[in-house]
Amino acid sequence: MLPNMSKTLQIEVDPKLCAGQERVILGELPYAELKQIQQDIDPSSSPIKVDLMFSRVGKFVVLTGRISSNLVLQCAACLELTDFAVDIDVNLAVINNEELVSLLPDGYEPYLFEGDRLIMSELVESEVVLVLPSIARHDVCPTQLPKSSTSKDFMLEPEVKKNPFEALESLKLK
Ligand SMILES: [Zn+2]
Image (cartoon, rainbow, N blue to C red):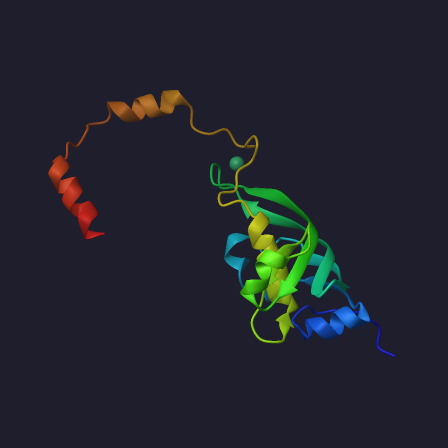
């Protein structure tokens, strides 16, 4: 018998069937297989670890468990890398009909998919997208940023005055 385990998460599953079997999805999504967030994270990021289980709550197929990783992002302030821990408590009601959103059982967020099959890697990445910061920053950057004295020196350089209307025109062209 095949264990209820899949190494790769690039799999399509039938949520109803999985719920009936209480199928467990264990696996990892490595950087190379990422599609939605690959550009936002550094290749040195750990794979995204997934430990999820399908089951039923009333008429709904639900997916519960954990998605975790240690991603590496680039700090927007100092451009050095910064660790970003991901630890998501997953409580999803998996639906393929938007009208069901208002009927969801308490405590479950909707995950809407199309058709009858659910692509696990897409679901996992979508959940990680929700927790990624739009701009990554260190709490305290390890590298000192330029101090105000530097910007003062900068101010002493000859200032090129621009016609404000010219600036406006160039904005309009964008
Ligand atoms: Zn920084």
